[in-house]
Image 1 (cartoon, rainbow, N blue to C red):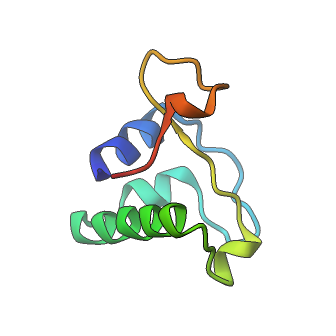
Image 2: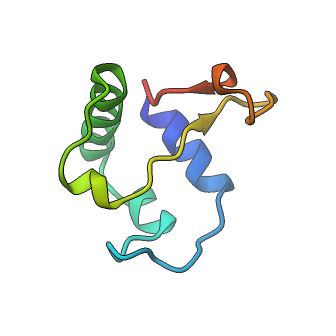
Length: 80
């Protein structure tokens, strides 16, 4: 769900951009429609176990569920 993505972005620090030039604050500014598409893309990739060529050059970080131990994989959620 895009609300979960935004919640994580709001808690994240706006660190220096990666090689793609994006920062957390950039993603949080996209439209609701684009955020929903991004959420769908994340979930499709996770469910299929496939990563697009562009994503092979980036980092995918699991979103921790609120008040859960983020070091245990089952306590992370997809962006659905």
